[in-house]
Image (cartoon, rainbow, N blue to C red; front, side, top):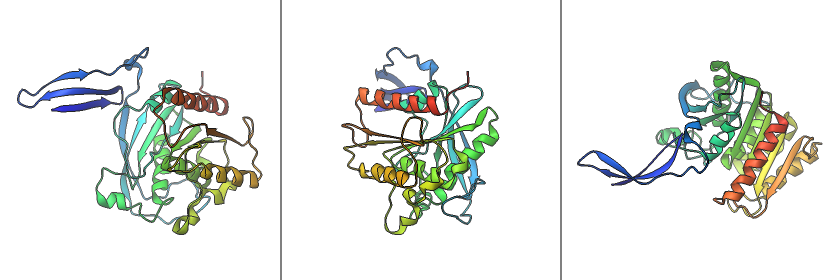
Length: 293
């Protein structure tokens, strides 16, 4: 049997497994170039209870408590003390975070930022009822779960710096980043939205981040590929127009920063394009937050 195997600290490898002998052999080993996999951070898994309404005030739309559920999360410790925290909700939303290798997470950890990933209600891997808890409720309880995860981590790990908390997400995670910025502005000190939705329609009109940009109280970086067919670049342009209409100014020393990524679509496997995004993230975070020396 051919299988792939990976861990938070190890890239995927291809193995051949002998079912009768209960032994395996590596067919295609992972390559790391100049990097030492022993330097990668492992993930600590924990759970907490959430009713979808965190302690942090709800600035955009107020929700009554939802059903209380057990929510799973993973924390990657950068080793920095005190450590800034990057809250990174996954995209999808019908996917889930596992203990696998993530190059963006390891890059951020290597730069001194601890990373929190949350399998909020609506994530896959927990059965139909858990997935369907998000139906008809984008921007509701699942966003409360994300904020509650950040609160829980800050309470439980005293080495996390509560004055340097970043919200960062891509795709549905990019929508989450926008929504967290307008719904829970008191919780975050910087926000990064990459190919995120800002303008929802029909039943979700009330949950459109563009309608509440005046609530944003931290530096915001907007990243979007101009060839994105899944989340059109118009979503980023709408957000920029809303920010400017509310009196926010664009620039590296101003309220928000805006970058359209040349040839990119919703994502890219091109190494140089990944390096470009790494550089943009690193530059923004360093200027806006910095890492304690």
